[in-house]
Every structure is written in structure tokens, then in C-alpha cells.
Length: 256
Ligand SMILES: [Zn+2]
Image 1 (cartoon, protein in one colour):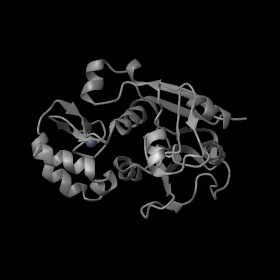
Image 2 (cartoon, protein in one colour):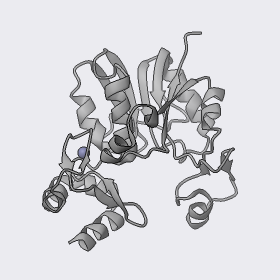
Image 3 (cartoon, rainbow, N blue to C red):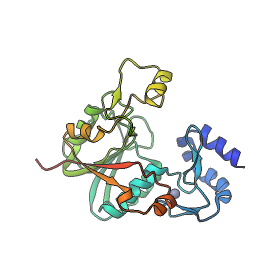
Image 4 (tube, helix red, strand yellow):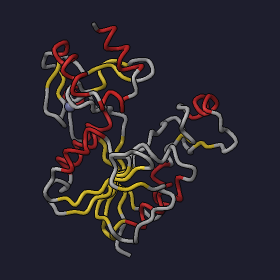
């Protein structure tokens, strides 16, 4: 059964898993009965999380809500270190992640808008390098794991900044390679196989390095860093299956 589950999660794209998640979760959950790990998003406990990724890396994907480490980290920040769930706010969520979308929609304090280039479940459809919206609209913007895919990430950051209200804040996560000081991009690399080799995934256009917060700053943001190691013990980080090397960047638009 473990081999079968590994086959499913490594060969079927996560969006498809999510689409059939009700069935998938009902099938696999009995095999993950236990209390070793805990998902802060759906609140369920399991023997372990499901494997996920190219190599089927063990203990990553929640069998309850299909969250990954990065979703659980963001949830932890929103729930314990922000007023996101209590203060009225107008929110723009670009490429909304499935573990969040329905939970955010249910929050009475939020006016919640979703956007995506194509996804039929999004409220609006646009390219984030040219957002067809007025300035100063949103208190909170989320746009995670998108900026590594767009042609000009700085143009997209400036557009996200523009549609935010002064004093608004954003979470704009990208995969950061901690071995790189500077972001690496090469516009001459266009073929999917070459991109996979150079940038780590066939549809990535760059690898962001440790200069990522400076790139956000060049678009106008003030950036705070949230490090989960400052707030949870290693035992807690292991129980929630968070990635202790992942930093959360909180990008703020300061009142001019
Ligand atoms: Zn979960």
C-alpha cells in the first residue's frame, strides 16, 4: 500500500490530487492512523504525512488537507503572529493554494478576492506583470510560488505593491536557494528540459537567492523576516513537519 500511495503522490499532479482529494484522503487516511505528526491547518494527527515531490520524499503532504511544509508555516504565522483572522481586511490572493482558499472564504472579517492567470476557480484572471486594478486597493496580498514563473519578477512585485494600500502587507514566497547569494536567471534558457536543469523545475525562469528580500525592497517593500526557529522548539517543528530552513518574508508597503 505504501508503494501505491507513493506512486499516486509522485505521478499525479497535486491539483489533480486536490480535485479528487475527498476520495483520495478517504482511501489513504486509514493507513496513516496515528499521532506522531499534527497539521496546524486541518488540526488532524497522523502516523506520518504522505510522501511528496520528484523523489517521493517522505512525510511531507498532509493526508487531511493536502498541505505542504510551506502552507503550514504560513498558517502558523497568520494564526499566531498576525491579526489576519480577526481584523477586517480586503485580501487579494493570487494563485490561491487549496488548503487555504475555502478556509479564507469562510472568514467573516475578510473581503477575499482570488486571482489567477487561468484557473477557473479564481474570481479574476490576469497577468501579475500588468494587473488591471486601481492603486491602493488591498490590505493584504498573498502570491506564493508564482514569482519564479513570471518573465519579469520585479515588474510583478511593483504591480503587487501598487495595488496594496499604504500600511498593507504581503506574503510573496518563492523557493530560495540558500547556496546562492544572488538570484540566477538567464533569458536565453527557454526549453523545459534546460530550465529544469538550470532552475530546478521545467517551468521556472530563475532561482532566487539570498538577495530575495533586497529584490522585494527594490520594488518598494520594507521586508521583515519570520523565522519559525525563534518561536517553536525543534520537537514542535518536527511534529508539525515544518521546514526549519524556510524563512517567511513579510513585505510591507509603508505609508509614504
Ligand atoms: Zn492538514
